[in-house]
Length: 315
Image (cartoon, rainbow, N blue to C red):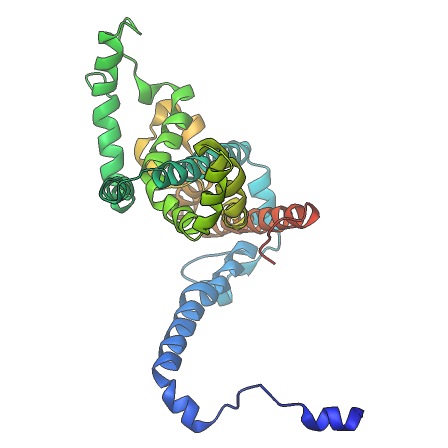
């Protein structure tokens, strides 16, 4: 019987023939292009990490620079300024994650509740347009709006909320909320596209059944919409946790000034200052490696927690 079953088994694995390769040649060519691109721009530059273990000098190059082991990492971790920039990066990254992540979900749900298709498409188009603006333009808008004679101070003065204008960019406690607000305003509409796509794939019969049972809008959101998009939320949350340490560079560099440097400087700015301005390439590379290791650790930690609680995970 076992032999007969083996004879009846059909090999469903497709055979790769020359004819099949010729038929898929366009797809294979484009796949090869992206593989080469990823190798050249993502993996090949990792060879530059060797500078973190050397006293790198441009004249001698990577192959002939003096090897110092973990010496640059010891200098990095003995620098009090590095712990300050690490705190700033982690704090701003957490604020950006919480605000942009929650607002994107809320905005997608609210956008889905708009009945008119024309109004929905108009609001969605307007909402993700800021994503395509450069940080130069965004910071320029912020400077104009929050300057001493800007719109924000004018509104606060006219409403008698304050007696005199507030120098927002000279007070440390305002910097992190400004960065979080800027990221939220710029990215909420764009991030909401994924959640809106997940919402539109929900079976409409579920909402019809809820309406028959007397469920209102809030009940539908609570018991149908949110549970249905939960897998999407978990996957994107894990991906965003990996980017937690990537708090940004442009907005902090453009809005920062000597008065608030204690809270505005991030690891990326630290790398720029030491790696390029001070010509200490090895120390800057060591700081970049530390940042990458923290990102990997966050991804594995988040994925392990998701697995422990039985949620969707990356791997």
